[in-house]
Image 1 (cartoon, rainbow, N blue to C red):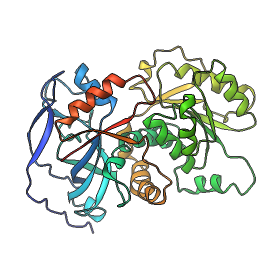
Image 2 (image 1 turned 90 degrees about the vertical axis):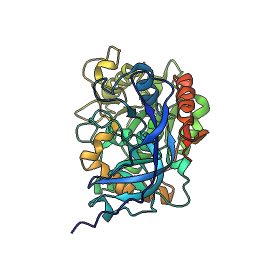
Image 3 (image 1 turned 180 degrees about the horizontal axis):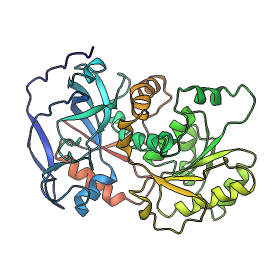
Length: 375
């Protein structure tokens, strides 16, 4: 029997509204108090992080439909405390729970449920409880990066790797038969998505080879990457192929995907020649909004795929990662909130500041995760 829905305490909501295509700055104004559906949770937002998709939508007028989509509330990454929960979600979340998760449903017809408001709602399948040892600003860096990486690595229509905590992952981690672990290559290990990809792959029982600039090698090793290569090196393809000789590579998660997809594909083909790539599919998973956006000539024989981060709410990956693994991994330290948050402003007014800073720094994989505290 489903738990009874919890009733929200009457409050006043405010949001940072995108009033029309390319409007700037965000308009800070009253917003309706969210009402949770059966599988939804309303959260008093305490910290939000900004992502490239946020300033892209604002600057380019994309994704949100001009007819009926505006005014819109953007934002994906949030952390805060539960205010109320729908009938189904109430069995897992109660008022006062500290949580982080993925808000908004861009592309699904709901453009007023983003994170950039004082009270926001999220689906229970994209929400995790966080312990008191994890601050809201720390937790806010995770949701979109983690969801994107999980979608790429574990969904059946993507790389379909074994989920952390499953029998397949446990067998790989125990390594009882003496065989060496399989390897995942993560291109762009210092990015937000790459940082999460490294940690998820390690938790799923894989050794990870990552790329990053030389100054970020120790950062990637701190996330338990076994090898780290400098993507500036002209001979990086041969370096990776030689280092992985005798190991089985299951594919590449390209967490950068700008001028790197063809490189990743060539590495897989070279690994295949020396017997170091998994039999069957040769797979490069990107973070672009579609294969057509790659803009590179990818060698034949390698599949290039993409999956949007929120799709995992509709399959077994969301509950396995957000419902089970994230709370346990945060509590044990197996999941680190990386990259470290950089708090650049306070209040909804600061979201425009954060987006402007992010847009100026776009183009470097070492960009910090910009966070705004919601007061």
